[in-house]
Each structure stands twice: as C-alpha cells, then as structure tokens.
Image (cartoon, rainbow, N blue to C red; front, side, top):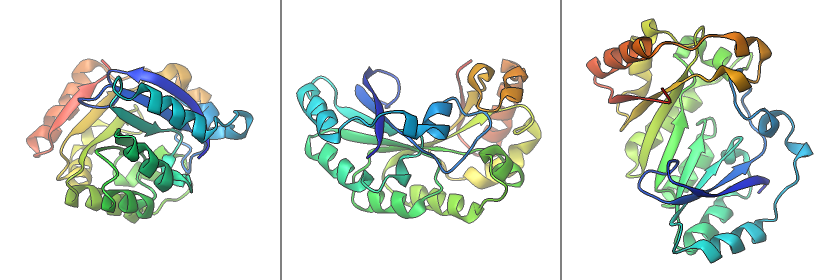
Length: 232
C-alpha cells in the first residue's frame, strides 16, 4: 500500500462513523477538475507511510474512531488493498472506500468478502462526456456500469457522486445521468471548487449557482433518482 497521508479524525467523511482517513497515491484517471494533483500526478515524490505504523496508530485509536476511509488517488489500483482491508477489519473498524469504479474486479472482491461497509463512487459525467471528464482519450464505460451493478446487488451501503463542472455536466444531462445511476441508494451533486483544479484553465471556470444545481437535482429526483446537493 502506497499510503501518502493520514487524517486522524473526521466527522463528515464516513456516514454515522467517527473515522480516520488514509490517502493513497496514483490514479488511472486524470480528471481535469481533480483537487488532489500531487497524489495523481506526482505520487512518487511523496514518501510512503509504513503500513505497520498506520495500522499501529489505528490500533491505538480504536474505541475513539470506529471507521476508516480509504481514499486517494484511486485505492483499487493498490495490490495490497485487499490484505490491508482485512487487517483493518480485524481491528474492529468499519471501512468506507472512495473509488472511481474503473476496477470492478477489485471492488467486487472486496464486496464479496464483506470487507466494506460503505462505498462512495464517483460518476464523472453523462456517458457521452465520461472520457473527457476522466481526462482520458478513451474509456471503457462498461467497467463503470459493472461497478454500478455490483453496488446495486450488494448489501453494502453506497452513494454515487458527481462534481458538477460547467462544460462537463449540464442540467440537460439529467436523462442520461438518471439512466446511468438508476437504482442508486443516494446520488450526490457536489459543487465544483475551481481554485485547485488539476488543469489550470478550469481554475477560471465559474461554478454553477445553487439554483442551477437545484434544478438538476429536481430533474433527477423526478426521474426516480434520490438526489441531494453538497458543498454549497
């Protein structure tokens, strides 16, 4: 596991849990609006924290924290993720995984083993702009759909979330987004924060107004997708 940083305590990142967070380096996407450029572009410049030290710290803090969020970067790229998750679970901590869903094999293995209590999966955009929003020349959308199918079929709690970036996501995408995320337990529209965007040109993009986000949420709710707004 290439753990680059740890947040010891979070009240907001794991629903109904007081949690620690670990961030791993490296990602298979290059989302132009990404807020974690160092983890994505230059993970090798950040030292790895020894896994045993991270586990020892979690062991000491159990009873105070009762969950761990594994975030990044993209955690499912980590060869040691499954074993790490087993060790965390053995400590009595629940696990939330943040993922882009592009490794359904890794996600499925974790779900099948019952190692996850909660999954937060990013939905980058409607299908016709998914590759662009992921920062890739091409993308196999069936991998995203497979991960979504895994979540729908699993007893594991989940939320899907989209950062609503002007130029990549629009109110007019409601039908396409609703088709993609149908059956979600919860769909969250996140306000775009331009100041730290990976692509400098997007740092000058003005976020949608609250009213515009509410309009998209209303259209999705009308299509049977339980949608909320975050970050406004």
